[in-house]
Image (cartoon, rainbow, N blue to C red; front, side, top):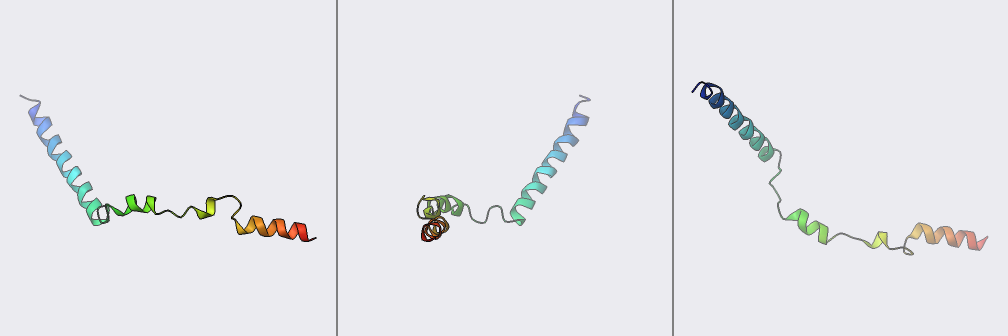
Amino acid sequence: MDILYLLIPLSLLLVFVIAALFWWSVKSGQYDDLEGPGYRILMDDDKADVPGESSTVDSDQNAAGDK
């Protein structure tokens, strides 16, 4: 029975900590856009990663070939 004197205040403290963290996450905008990041992955522009299409590599090769 004496353990209840410890567990009840600890549980109330835990509830207040969780509520404060939830309130902070809502105020900081963590739940504003839940679907956008998932679609952003699908709409990623991968053209810069294709080898041979980089303008800096082509211009360097052309400059070396012109000399």
